[in-house]
Amino acid sequence: MGEGRIGVVETPEPTGGVRLQVLACALCGSDLRPWRQGWPVIPGHEVLGRVDQPGDVLHGSRALLYISAFCGHCAECRAGRTNLCEAMPPLLGWQVPGGYAELVAAPRQCLMPLPDWVPDRLAPLLLDTIGTVAHGVRQAHRVVEPGPALVLGAGPIGLGAILVLRRFGFKPIHVIEPASYRGQVAAELGALPADAQDPPRTLLVAVAPGGAVVQLGESDAWHLTETRPIRRKDFFLIRSFYFPFSDLAENFELLRDDEADYARLVDDTADLDGLDGLFAAFARGERLKPLFVPS
Image (cartoon, rainbow, N blue to C red; front, side, top):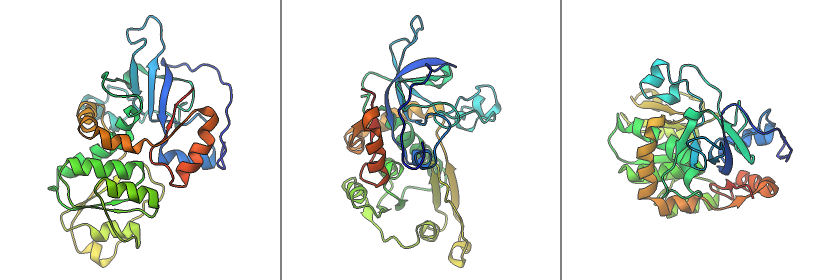
């Protein structure tokens, strides 16, 4: 509702695709924008649901929801790059109602069925915390060899980056994180604390010649201020907003390889009645990757 207020209201049952009962929806740093500003649709874009469509072949099965209703026909989709769909389709929880609800509807092509071994509690991590991050690291891995890495911020994306970078062989990994709780968990995952001076410039100054700076997820405050130390070296600047649908199988393996560490990130849950307090704690940096779980 804006200004840090969450309203619980009755709405018509969702239409416009396959209907799912929401099993979990992970809180994301980008959700703080609608939490503060208000939003015209129900937010929530890291959604795990159970198909509730009697007679459908998928009825009763669990599925993650891909954020973009990609067309499947454009050149990018045909090449497997569904995250770059030329149709610029609406996004779940942003332009169409999302997962902070009991029910959600999504186009069939957005359903990503889950293997039985993936627990409900960790499944939403396969979207942004693993999916978006791993896509960005894979992009960087195309142009640089594993070596030292610096992570700006140990929120859900930053902590996911530490785990993915570690799995890809990058070391040592340093992190800039002012919140003590998140910094402590980053250290437990093997990251070393770095001094926080001017974070946006720190990344561009710190990157080695021929290295890569990777911007992950969403940011309303990404600005480049070029100075002589930045100008006098070559480096790669990589943008990763989301991951292609085809990455999912590899991302399952990332979760399987470090399941105990990813489980450390899911540190709280709440139903509709407790969602207000959960968001406030998340905004203060007192939670890592909490989940909305309908009662």
